[in-house]
Length: 436
Image (cartoon, rainbow, N blue to C red; front, top):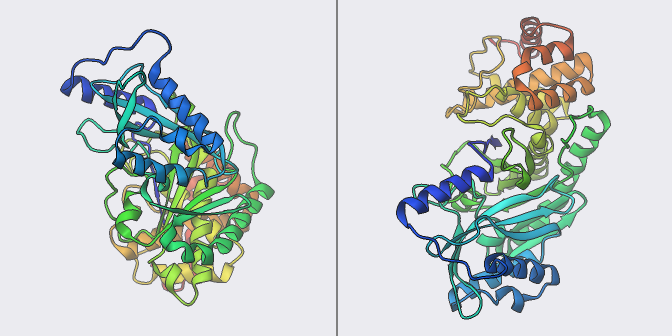
């Protein structure tokens, strides 16, 4: 249930720079434009119009070659199943560089995304007879020639031959057609998790900074194949983390590409359905808890402003990020929360301190489990002492301005950080006899 922070220079400005450096260094020369309106944007506009009209033939018209046509036919048939608030293709340069064109699919899932978000493609193009044509489609390349992990490619509509889609209030859940049975079984449990999280947030939410809003809903992908799980939205694939059961990936708002602050337009949640939360006899509880955890991340992701360059060295406290997600997972389940804390601290050397960010995502299962449980415990203790509204206000403030961490603790509790930490540690030792 690891939150993946995709903030390394994220924003399309960085992508554009990488594109330019790669191509200028290796493929000098620009394909000249013909007089009149930009034919490449005209082509992209035609695809936008065709998707809105659900006109498959018009959508496929610019693609040249049987293989690419068949691939994009599947993409189109997947795209028309998604409820779109906005869906358009936008060229990022006036012309291709020796046959390569950087194009962004700017999209906003209805009821899910706070703002339109990007997926960045690399099109191989040719001038064609009278109109340009596309001969191959892939994710945008980084300066090493690999598919960029900030292109947010491949999305499920790119990867799966046939997409199964389930829509519920505030939830769009998808899977490969071959895994439709899993999706059918889980979707209503996930929909209830979505309702639980959103109802809780709306009840006690603080006033948010101007221009910021929380996520109105959730987009969830269920996937049992770990290789596919690691590849979705991650270019050539993320390094496998065997302790991770699900991931929430925050995607920047498309219009934030020139912003110095992080501005998330929405999130994409991927869950590994081969994991025990989905396969045990208590699967309903497991699916509910991982759903509430990852959706907890997604709700507040648009409030984050910090651009993270090195994981663990950021100002944002990881115990707050993961602690809040676990707080939401166990909200209203006090017995489960206490049992989880006791189990997680067995054999762990508790030093009375809140977990440090640098080693929060330890490769050791015992340590990582303890860090998650301790983060949740700190917020549960805050909620019991000062009320849930204080918890939500603290989390929202920390996401928005993590440099004010110590003052935010004081604002929530009336105590300096050291005193809050000491009082909380005593609470943990009372709850877990023998905790060192």
